[in-house]
Length: 116
Image 1 (tube, rainbow, N blue to C red):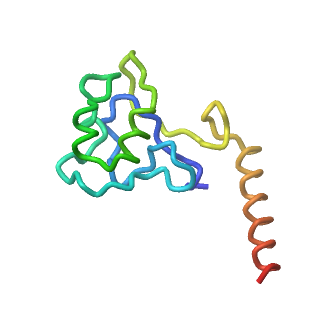
Image 2: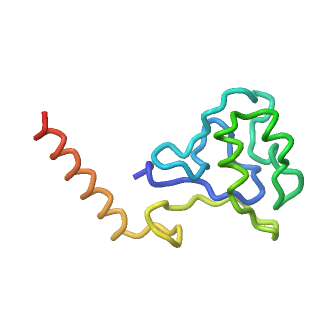
């Protein structure tokens, strides 16, 4: 079930740039770039809360990550970072959505075994 959890950016103070799933990238939600060891947390890419520092992202990241990060809308109201469930539009985990993911994974696993 952990594969469905990712961070929604608020202040960026809790989200580790390389270790945590936070990008809107299906499957991994993680950054591809490995260029910025000096920026450990996502808030290092914010100019002020609610505004990306486009210069910092452009200089320190691969273009594919820079483009994706700058496409993430940020709240203009200061808020904390939240864990959200990617399989529900509201971001909230429900037993129903968790069950659907588990069932879908089992069906895909069975189909893969049959095709081998």
